[in-house]
Length: 297
Length: 299
Image (cartoon, rainbow over all chains, first blue to last red):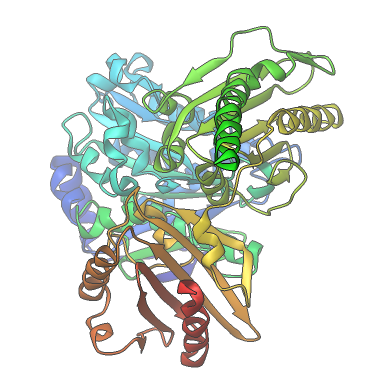
């Protein structure tokens, strides 16, 4: 993993490949997303005020965080320019959220995304936000573009609930993909309803769950305020970074290496077997923004 | 002859009672849980789930229970104004071993406040007793909800007459230096990596017919994981070991204990129909000690 701290206006210059790849992306996104090497660029942004003392999400801060993250990711001066790199006004956009009762995608993040989409020129009637109803949702059925946003949490069978796993609702029988502790979730990303459409992935790390207990998996005892978002084009790379944080938190809390059981092998296999993205931290360009205390990686 | 007749008569008379008592517990357990407690009321029908429908309720968490085997799960929810809902889930596992297994894989710190083993966390009580795995949630916790779920837990625990037993294979674990809280019982290969990576594949032919347990051992600065698998026959154990050696590390064909790339030690032994594996061991000496203790399995 190569990581750098950046100040507010200090962006990491990659090569001209960035400019070329952006052009390639807008014309032929499938080809770009099919490339697992070169490195995947991922932004980890944190803000001390992202979560209020009450535990609620700070809407204003979330809006600022996502704005800053996309600016860094796409190397633009303002968030609108960043969004214009991945969204066209004529797009039909599905925001794939996650409504798990105990730790859902914050509504504040959904509204922040929607706001920027509309500023780019996407009509409101062409924006849909859904989780379990995506297969019945006309927006998602005809979507040209997807934005994938969900919190990371531990999971009794897949190891973690991840960005890759978030697309399991695009299949009629999710349990069909549970085999071998959800090893091949990445296959879902090749289905026509989603293939090549995802423009942005946001792994919510505001209050992640790092250990599951009981049938529902949730206990506030195993949630902590990390106050971060992990943002990138590559879902596998974003998940790999999130997983590192979860593993580090488990080690810190339990005082020893406490591996996830079952392990979150679908993330690595998304790379090695399915070539969906980069799971190896050596192939991820991780850019930090925001406060460093408690970052764990 | 008289004694034999008496014993037989005693057995015939008691056996149907044993079945009826257990069936009565199974049938009546939900009936013995009050529908009202401290102002919380459950006035809806209980929801019942099976292997097919449990996914609709707890998503992928269902696989945990399916991997151990259960006949049904019953949910009852209690409501009270200005208080969190209390969610009671009762899993009818196929055996007390299964109840213990599911509990051991879904728990944090183990206590014994309720049932055979329990965990009490903020807004939650989990425990197993007999064939039952019980989960009671009320989040966000209030003083009132905490008291209410404790009362519900006690009533359920009291209603389950049969304590159940720990899986027999657990009694085969060497006792010296065993970290009791680390014991994980399973019959699905997915749980092989509970205490560190061994394999992503079913490298040991684990099935519902095998009894598996993995636990941590600690002695001074030495640590290790010990995996014990009981097969139905010695031949099955032999086949599994062959497969393991080919898939894990071929050096084990020649040596019982080897040093791995991460400077940790590991090894295997076959003891009749048992596979004994030591993994992530900090020293060769400690691995040898554990194998020496494990040899008592067949005593």
